[in-house]
Length: 288
Ligand code: HEC
Image (cartoon, rainbow, N blue to C red):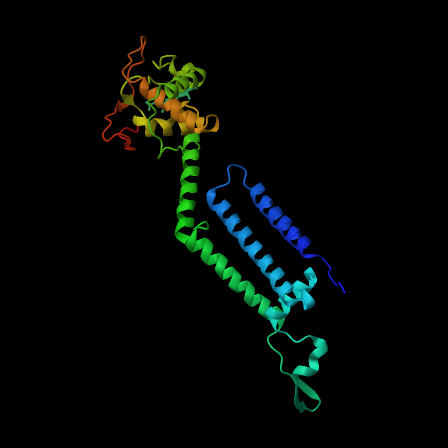
């Protein structure tokens, strides 16, 4: 009689196609060139899956009566009985103990199948864990995770700093590259020249080309004055209209005007600014 549910050849085919499907799904998740660690991982997975299914098939084939081709169901139930060693409920009598406590009887059963399967899962997981963390290292250990996070944070920081969103009066630095000075000059002509003159010589606002400052020289002071303005003296608060990066550029442009001696320059106002340490936030002249 042939109880075969699925012939052996079909089991192998089914297994192979399942394995191929799962591996192609794993590959589909990697957008660019798959990294070698992952490929290796998948290779190992395919290998074990194949070994596992070949083993079940062989064991079941070996144990099948009169060398009948085993069915998948038979193979699996054979494996199940080997793994759990459980007595089916129909054979309960076999494990029933003689004790009788007021009608309550006791079975001498082995650990339940669900418990054993959980146990097997932990064993398999242990292997996967050990292999991935300590043998091929494709999952990072705590230290690796930390390094990775630091790297990401550094990258984000670099992007933010590059975009100028983080520039403030404490962190601002003098820009000297031509592009920044040029764009600072454009901002100046558009927004500042009306009061400070096209060459910074001073009109309503003070001369910005000399070394005398009412609110302190140096990039940090100039940045702060431009950002906050001096509303009661007619100097606008620019932080509501210009981005921090733009204020940095225009302030750098203003500083680049130092000593240009334009014609019709307004006489100096404020006190002589001596840039002590570069980038000092020192404010040596506050006259109100
Ligand atoms: C509406 C006129 C006006 C405009 C526009 C203006 N300023 Fe001023 N600015 C002033 C006045 C007036 C002062 C003097 C404030 C004081 O006496 O405290 C001043 C002061 C300054 C100072 C401080 C000078 C010092 O000696 O400490 C800087 C720097 C400055 N302005 C830069 C700019 C820049 C850059 C812009 C354009 C983004 C600009 N200003 C636009 C009127 C203006």
